[in-house]
Length: 192
Ligand code: ZN
Picture: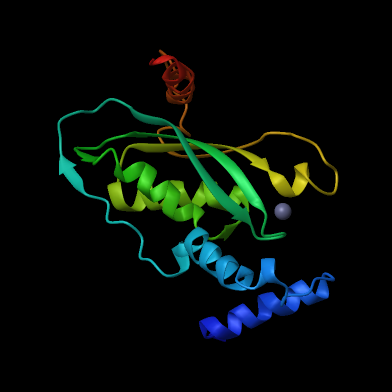
């Protein structure tokens, strides 16, 4: 069911009443409009297409790691923020993607209601499908405010990973791609 903006604002106003507020009082008069505008921005992934992933021919065949990428998503269970730090790695197969497209893709994937586990796999699958690389690795670290500010009230970090292709396969010698990836992620904190 599609709601017109004024109907959505009315629903927010009704929620304010439900919580015991007077939505007509001075300070709250424009709150429904602001709430709808804010969530339209925060959940813009429902209305905007996935960013184009510009891909270039390249002979570079070593690992590419972009990390850390900070973003905010919202849990689908409570619509409360998840503060996310993402690390993305891939091993190209004759094609590389424009570097800035990786954070753009991650941020776009975050602008919908998610659970962290599925979000991790979704990012890996999109990169795998579009790039056809030798492997993709995605690690997300998330602080779930629904767990910090309510309920169990613990400031824990939830880590999830999705590995595809070469990152899942055993190697007979040398550093495993996963170990190389994690090493790069750690080192990327020391660039400045
Ligand atoms: Zn939640």
